[in-house]
Image (cartoon, rainbow, N blue to C red; front, side, top):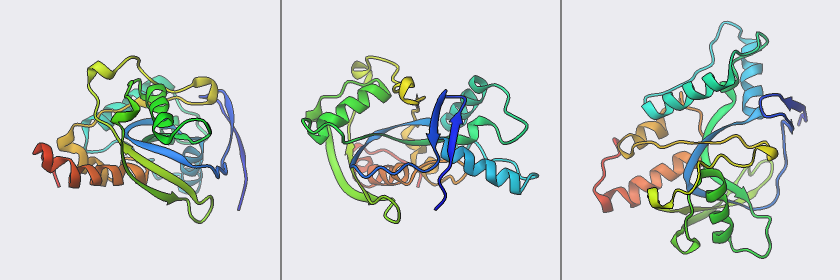
Length: 215
């Protein structure tokens, strides 16, 4: 196992490439894109070893392509030493550490959704989907996934996380009819949690609302 240290200039905060988190996490069916230095460095190593291969970006979903384009325009020109900073941007579920002993998982989830996505969702409206283990070969963290339905009435801010904690988050909205195309598009960098949440929605919620998710 190799440990490395990175001063991520775009965020202005230091990062470890490998960060061991042994506490539980909560993840929710709202998601966002954000830059992850570890992902960027993987792409940097790939570009260094294969200098003629371009970093893959974008995807079939227009919303994903727009988000990537927006990230690139905000970041400016990349260094000649590696791929553009947008290579470190991934799509992932809104999530947070379970590090507040006095709060329930639902209450922690509510705080994270408000902080990262800008939606004020009552804890009672969060539907627990399931719990599972992540990073079983390294951290073994237990994650609990929730689902919430929101409207413009729940939106109280732009979200974005806490910049002083190194969080630079953009809320992403994918049309429901493009959900499964987005989930299975390998050119769009995303976590397994995103794919699982879309499959869960397709199997459990889409039939209820008679929504076609393009499978």
